[in-house]
Length: 475
Figure 1 (tube, rainbow, N blue to C red):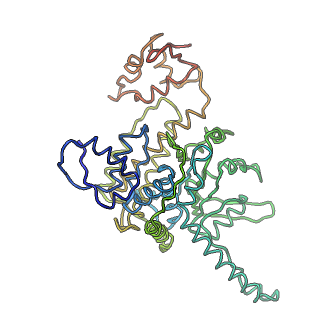
Figure 2 (cartoon, one colour):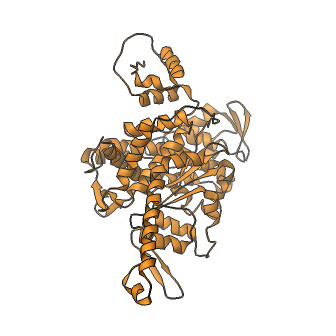
Figure 3 (spheres, rainbow, N blue to C red):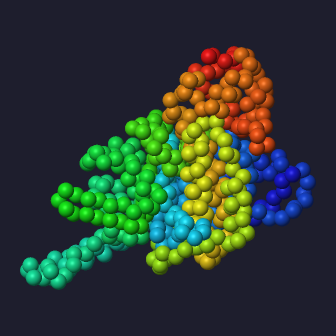
């Protein structure tokens, strides 16, 4: 049974009519068990009214961030998925190399994210990202004004070749880049030791630029950048560059029809796809214009939060995980499945487990910026938030893979897939198929999950749907 106490502040939302009807439906007595925030109420409302099994878990954020997400969703009608993921990416960019998460000795994790915003034309993908990154755009604008002033002074004072030897030309600081060559990217990283985020409206253009300037395999370079491995560039001219601690984030949007571009040229098998966080709302709503004004107090709060992360001292500190949080994390990871029906699920699982660490670091520092946590260690709530985000992005990753992967014939299936196919009757119901496919294995756990089997049933080269809940094998 759900019970709510609504504050006066909650009544300012123009969704209150819908929410009030929802509360009337769920409450049967006047008993009040406590008070909840508007964000808590909104989350319950979405879970009970939306036809969406994969709602972005925005309750993982501190209250101040939840408020701005709800405000932008309510007034601008930006997708909560886009807002939540955009804020994660903006916070990641602001943190950069200032902090890393210390898992154990010689294992430290940076917080860079590779984010892909998926949607239809007109879903306000770019507008939502601009909203989330506005504090960083402002900071880069300030950097540019400062650079222009320094450059003017440099050019005025450098009137001879002798002066050129004593004065250094100013360098432009920045957090975001959009159009660049691979060599220019290394120069920019060298001049911005805290790191860079590649921010582009259409990521399909970013993909098309791979190997535009050379044939050295730019996708492989990004694999190293994602991991934070040292990168270097050697030229025939003898000029060399090396970045020992690269920090590269990526964020941009793409249309649903372009998703297959991400899987081409071997990117579906070399691990590139598995490093991408796909933001793919299940039931996006059409944007409706309105004249509602955004609460400037909340906008200022958000700007101050991201700016405070940008202004943190660049000490490259390590944050350990508090002991009970570490035990929770390790127990969760050790209990993850070992067998997978699809090979790509294993790769997605492994990369997203690493992302849990990155998410946790970001959430911990956001809590610190919102005065809801410290920056001494990673707390349990941040680890739990990272795991919630893992579950959200995993569903999206599998959804994208199903849409972009070439279906396999029987001879190219994995051993587990072949075994299940052989054990199924020629004709079977969904319930019968689940009983066969999900039976207990040697480790005492089901061989696969219900969801995995239902995904398997979608392979029309293996199964034909005879009627609702009834299937037959094709091969």
